[in-house]
Amino acid sequence: MPAGAPLPIPPTADEIVRRLRAAGCVFAEDEAALLLEAARSGAELEAMVARRVEGFPLEHILGWAEFAGLRIRVADRVFVPRRRTEFLAQVTVSLTRDANTGPHHPTPVVLDLCCGSGAIAAVVEASIPQAVVYAADLDPAATQCARQNLSHPDRVFTGDLFAALPPRLAGTVDVIVANTPYVPTDALELMPPEARLHEARFALDGGTDGLDLQRRIATEATRWLAPGGHLLVEVNEAQAHVASGIFETGGLHARTLADDEYEVTVVIGTAPFTNDLFRTSMDF
Ligand SMILES: C[S@@+](CC[C@H](N)C(=O)[O-])C[C@H]1O[C@@H](n2cnc3c(N)ncnc32)[C@H](O)[C@@H]1O
Image (cartoon, rainbow, N blue to C red):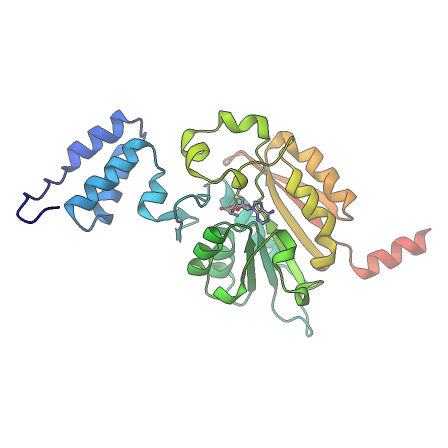
């Protein structure tokens, strides 16, 4: 702004609500309150409102998303954690609490694969402080956020699925949670513009039936899981049967948990205990 130019008049709360509502924001009052709280100057407030009216996700404008009661840092283009994924996070916490730890393995080990901002890992850390939590994602912008959201930045890795991990983790992980992209490619164009235009395509596109990454993960999971460990993914109801079959093919015992409130299904694949393998071979 040139020296001596009049300062822009910041929009009032009523004006912001009116502009947000006209742009189609359903929770215009709530959003206006958050923008007013976040802006450090009138000019910044105007810029934030203008971006929101253009269709940028509120979370990218604020720089954070609320997830299971936590404030999770999310940078532009990074996948915004969805409310429905709180169910996957709850199941992850519950299985981690029940993990089969013992004298040689005193604290549960959790891996958030395809971690994005690290939202699920952050819930595990907040719920079970003694858990050793790792996270990995292909996208450096996502892992940069995850390092800010998690208490051990050195446990966050960037790379393609398991290839990102240090080999020493093989056979040690009690719970692998992987909220992979699972939208079938043909359905991408039906997604709301906020996701379609402002989140990376590789964070959404799950291939022809949406389960491409889950196939790759299930193939390798038993190499990384501790005996009796679990792999968890989120799917929609229509994908659950195929996803269960993928897990079984990968040597995991599959079951599903559906949540009516969030309209989402979690598929859990459990690795055999060595004893189970022994018993199975004895049965023959
Ligand atoms: C649906 S988002 C989920 C992010 C986060 N777990 C959450 O629930 O908010 C999927 C994530 O998978 C990551 N991703 C896609 N392909 C990947 C790959 N080959 N290896 C690792 N991460 C991948 C994307 O970068 C994205 O962050």
